[in-house]
Length: 154
Ligand SMILES: CC(C)(COP(=O)(O)OP(=O)(O)OC[C@H]1O[C@@H](n2cnc3c(N)ncnc32)[C@H](O)[C@@H]1OP(=O)(O)O)[C@@H](O)C(=O)NCCC(=O)NCCS
Image (cartoon, rainbow, N blue to C red; front, side):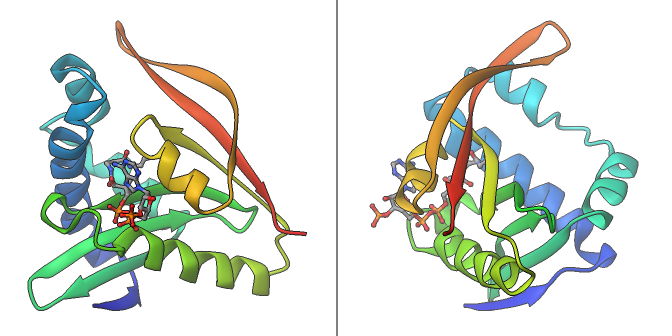
C-alpha cells in the first residue's frame, strides 16, 4: 500500500469509495434510509469538488486502486475518513490517520477533533480520541447520530 496526496482528478474515485463505504460498511449501524441520506447514489459532484479542494487530501492505494482516503484541515479537523469495503480492518484508516497526524503536528497543531459515525467511534478511540456529546445530523427529514470526538496531543 502507498500513500499519496490527492488532487482534484481524484474526486470521482473518492466519491465512489465514500458511497460504497457508507452503503456497505455502515449498514451495521445505520438504516438504508439513513445511508441514502448520508451518501445519495447521485452525488453532488460540484459540492465534492469544492469541499475536497478546501482540505488536505491523502489517499491510500495499491495495484487494485483506491483503498481509502482522509481529508483534514490545518486547524486539526479530521473531516473525512473512509476505507474501501473490501479493505476494511486491514489498517488502511490507521495508516492514513497516522500520516495526517504527523503532518498536523509538523504544522503546529496540538488539538484534533472530528465528528465520528457510530462505526468510526471505536476507530477514533483506538487513535486516542475521546467522545464528547452525541450530535444529531439532519439530512432532509432523516436524522443520523454521530459523536463529536477530540484528542489533545500535549
Ligand atoms: C471507520 C473506518 C474508516 C475504519 O477503517 P479501517 O481501515 O477498517 O480501520 P483500521 O483497519 O485501521 O482499524 C484500526 C482499529 O480501529 C478499530 N476499528 C476499526 N473499525 C472498527 C469497527 N468497525 N468496529 C470496531 N472497531 C473498529 C479497531 O480497534 C481496529 O483494529 P483491529 O482491526 O486490529 O481490531 C471504516 O470502517 C469506514 O470507512 N467506515 C465507513 C464510513 C465511516 O463511518 N467513516 C467515518 C466517518 S466519520
